[in-house]
Amino acid sequence: MHYKGFSASIRYDDRDGIYHGQLTDSFDNVYFEGSTVEELEIAFREAIDDYLTYCAETGRQPS
Image (cartoon, rainbow, N blue to C red; front, top):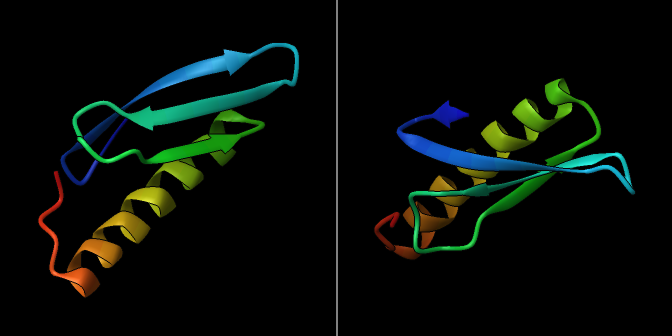
C-alpha cells in the first residue's frame, strides 16, 4: 500500500480474521487494521493523515 509517499507492510491474522498494517518507511510506529481490504485501505489513509497532523501540531518532521 502507498499513500502520500508512505508505504506499509500488511499481515493477515487468520485466527482473528483481521488485516494488520504498519508503515515500512518510518522510524515512528504507525499501525492500522481492518477486517476487509477496503477497511484496511481506509484505516491506512486515516493513520497517515492523523500521523501527519500530529507531526504538524508538534513541530516534528515525519520520519
